[in-house]
Amino acid sequence: MSASSKPDARRNASPYLYGGEAAAVARVLESGQYGHSDTTEHFERRVADFLGVPDAVAVASGTAALHLALIAAEVGPCDEVIVPSMTFCATVQAILAVGATPRFVDIDPATLCVNGQLVMDAVGPHTAAVIPVLFGGRPVDLTAVRGALDEQGVVVIEDAAHAFGSRNGTRRVGTSEALTCFSFGPIKNLTCGQGGMVIPRMPKDADTIRRLRLLGVGQSQSERSNATTYRVDGFGLRYQMSSLNAAIGLVQLDAFDTTERTRRALWRAYRRALAGLEGVRLVDVDPDQAVPHLCQVRVPNRDRVFADLRARGVGVGVHYPPNHLQPAFAQWRRPLPATEQVAEEILTLPFHQHLTEDDIDQVRAALGQALTAAGGVPCARS
Ligand SMILES: *Cc1c(COP(=O)(O)O)cnc(C)c1O
Image (cartoon, rainbow, N blue to C red):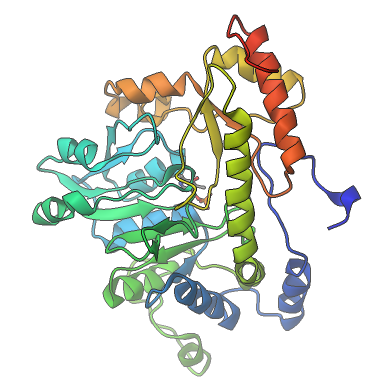
């Protein structure tokens, strides 16, 4: 990409294209096959091979992936789903979409993720599933409580929207016994423009999700094109991934080694740059394991620091306002001290592949100035 078309490095997030995406989309446009097609199935195969899993099912978005995973896990009305309040609202909306109830839980403030203890403390007679959120790309290892969850019939559905490519030990996220849901939205580690993927636990999940994503129609494309009718086997939604989106994903997947390396290097550059800055605590994504999706810090006087950095043109953000404090989810509110505390402190710094180490040094300098201006945090060297 030429320097003149480089997006503003100070943006909070930005997709990164490798150059072949436009031509790949053009080829699909010329083919006339825009919907679910061989291109979508090819992308599924390639993702499954990349992760080292038997199968992967492409869908329209990360939210659709979570919704379909919950249906495949037979979660429904009267069921409770354990979910951290500290997540994007999509996670909660997927729970409501199946008529289930969110049981909001607290997080470890150091990682912004749940752990086995926090999950087990929330398990009750109506718990049907738990959705750990792999915040910032960080793997969440529930192996230690896996047996206890199995015993209680609690299904694990990973919200890995931030975590495509991350590892848990030697294996990629998506290879555990959980149902894993990825998002390929515009700013995720791998983008299809829009899209998502479910990694099924077993062939039955995959069959269910493949039927659900195509309006409940059971036959294959070729069976249907040779018949005068089609067969609706059950409930379904318009949730397939278009070939236009899959074509983008295929190009992104080819370049994922570079994505992985770049995102890790940039996150570590931030860690080095921020090390001497008093009052700033970096949220650890475990970059030896994760393909980092966000770079977050915790700071005092966050609202003032946020406003000051915005005024300086630095694209800071807040991921996320807690869900248990949202008006729509008020009936499931409960005190969550760690979440409420970190919600006042978290600040997301610009993090995307257009950044250079120079940009990171500039963000660091602006952050130091903003902290001083916001009230009395002495800055070591800014
Ligand atoms: C992006 C995201 C989703 C939803 O994915 P979409 O592709 O935008 O539908 C779900 N959970 C988290 C944590 C996300 O960041």
